[in-house]
Amino acid sequence: MKQAELTETALAAFLDAFYARVRRDPLIGPVFAGKIPDEAWPRHLATIHDFWSSVLLKTGRYKGNPFARHLGIAGIDPAHFARWLGLFEETATEVFVPEIALEIVERAHRIGDSLKAGLFFRPDMRGVRP
Image (cartoon, rainbow, N blue to C red; front, side, top):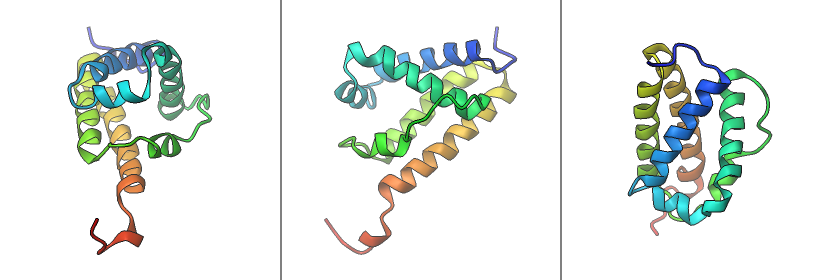
């Protein structure tokens, strides 16, 4: 039965299911594995839970800087973001009723667009070829 309410418990179950998929994914799984060792995943998931709880439930638990955390990851590109968002949407639609799934997927797209703009759009590099 799909979750009809966005609660801490439902959010945690969703995030755990989603990141299990992320870790198994052939495109983005290796990026995560290269940055987060197995023993660090419980702490990383706790941070992710705090982030999404702050974003979706307005708890204010997350105090970090997601842009800075992603800036130092070598080898990520827009295709990785697209795959992450695809898995996020798949999992959300499986876990939540459509109204809630749509709400959290739209939020994820806005956050992803902001991160991509900061990571990949460089006005100072326009016209410069690598």
